[in-house]
Length: 132
Image (cartoon, rainbow, N blue to C red):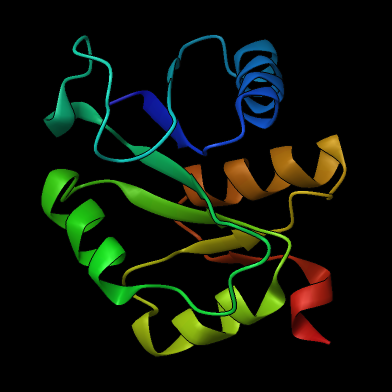
C-alpha cells in the first residue's frame, strides 16, 4: 500500500504537492482528485495508504459526513488534513482516530515532508501553529 491521494479543489496546490511528494518518495504512487466524488478510475481504493485532504480556507467547520465518506471509501488510509484554517484541526480533535495529521497549506516544503514522514511512521502530526 504505497499510494497517496491528494484531494483538493485547487489544481495548482494539488500539482505542487504531488511534485513535492513524488520527488521525495519515489516508491509511492501519487494520485489527485478535485473532490472525493470524482476519483480517477485508475485508483485501487483498497490500496490507498494516505489521503491528503485539502479543505476550503473560508469554511469554518469540517463536515463530519465528509470524514465518514472518506473512511468508507478508504478504510485503511491515514488522513492528513491540509488547510489554512486552524479551526478545521480543532474541530477534528474529538475524532483523533479519523485524522492523524494536520498541516497548513502555507507550511514549508520541509514541514510537509516531516508531516508525511510522521504519518508514514505511524505517528500523529500537528502543524506547530495549530498548537498555539
